[in-house]
Amino acid sequence: MTLDPGDQSALLLSMIAALLVFAAIIFVFGQLAARRYKRRLKALYDRAKSGGGAAIPAAAQSLARIESTTPKIDRVARRWLPRREILAARLGRTGRAISIGQYALTMLGLAVIGALAVLYLTPLGLTPSALIGVLLGVWVPHCVVGRMGNRRVSAFIDLFPDAIDLMVRALRSGLPVSEAIINAGHEIPDPVGCEMRLIESGMRLGRDLETLLWDIAKRIDAPEFRFFIIAMSVQRETGGNLAETLGNLAEALRRRRQMRAKVRAMSSETRATTMILGGLPVVVIGLLGLTSPDYLGPLFHDVRGYVLDSIAVAMLVIGVTIMNRMARFEI
Image (cartoon, rainbow, N blue to C red; front, side):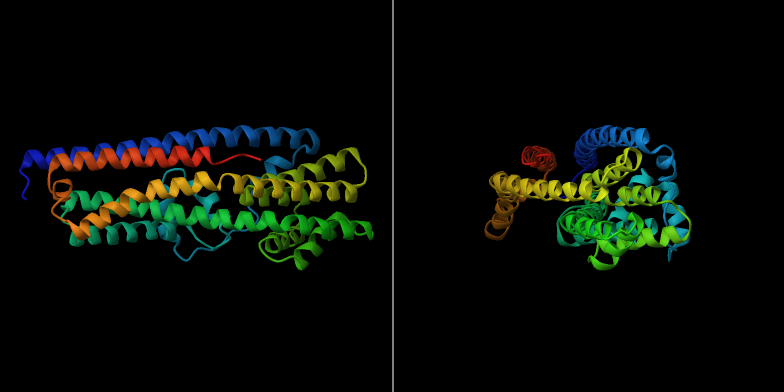
């Protein structure tokens, strides 16, 4: 079916409206999460300042600068990409040497491939295919990087109590805290080991221990590690048995991990329901496309069908997002 200029304009407006709704949803939830994170981080920094003094401003410095293989693309991407500091932090959480330029090239390549695939495999025109390609190019790298970062942080949290136990044994044997952390970095597997070994490299360059720990906290972004830094800062100012303090912290982190596992088990039904309800429309459309393709023709060949598609996608995204929020609990 060939669309006249008026229908093409209506189609373009409907796709733009769907993109705006999707962008508004991401923006609202992103702002809420950012505000909550800033409030918690400010409270932690205030507590650290009251105990440590000038260690926080120095924590803004990076431990090491990774040479990029695409320096020119990095400069262009840093100029045009929004929220570059947040993107750099997300890439740092993955533990991989992924530069902003490589990330931008991946986005561009996926956008072009996705647009061409939609254009040649579906009856959609050039403009809808380009918009879908842009969505794929932005969404897929964002999800992949986020998942890589979350998996690395989860692995760090699982191993961190064991690393604290090694530090406690070293402290009870008479070693200073810096040597205890360095020995734990050589004994414990990655990702805890590689982060602790960065402390050894930084101390050889003359940087203080607390600054290096806050650098790791920026990359790991886990409350368990910030508890560790604050406990060491408070103990340094007030005195006391650091080995006993860290031992109690390791036990608290283990109980926290057990509680998180219980909460995840209790919310498994809600998460399964979310996956089923979110995937059911896609499965039904796929089955109808195979068995009765003419039945779905108006959804892909008529401007009113495009409007309905946009509304359905927006409602599905809103519903899945709300159910995911309901299944999450902060411990």
